[in-house]
Image (cartoon, rainbow, N blue to C red):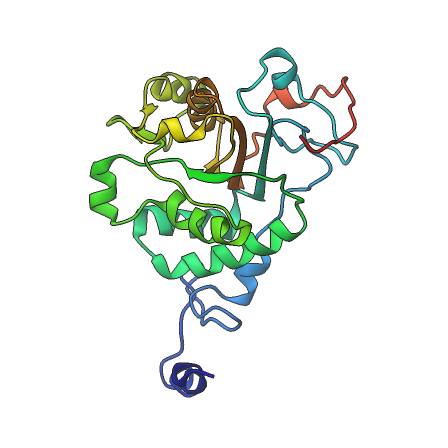
Length: 258
């Protein structure tokens, strides 16, 4: 036991830690995320989802292919999100990305590991995080997707490779609608200097949040054009309850590993 672990109960009694997500005194494994908020992290079902893009269905059913993937085949062969982007988890991601609360990395990594244990992630050769712009990297001091992807790559026993993709300067994707996001992201990414290293390999593209899918599709197209087979994993998945693209489930297929 490290000295800080031995002293923590005494320090917590003198200076009780407060949860960054709800402001209450934190009790539990993480000093900056209380037990109640941790319980609010909702996993995405691993069964009632589109077998290609991983979009959660609106009823508990066997895996199917959603209408969006039937009409527009995505540039990746597999995509999953670990948690729903709502409640405490959405607040944690927002505080990490826009508030610089690096203390929440440990919380998010812990819950990512737990969800991955049940996911049966296909074999990959390397992990590529969705990049951020140079100006945001300087301002934040880190790339949120890269920081979350690093322990993932270590866990999978494959390299985390930067320099594969480059993010051009442009407007933020936050608070943008589906159509605006598609337009905004169309030329937002370009191949990096290390793009030649992915030909013939299975690449796991990692992003923190899947909102409309515009970002991961744009990045996946570049990777695919350069010879990679692309799989996508995101920490969180936003579900649009009124999105008609995921109501039609008329193409049942067996869920098979790609």
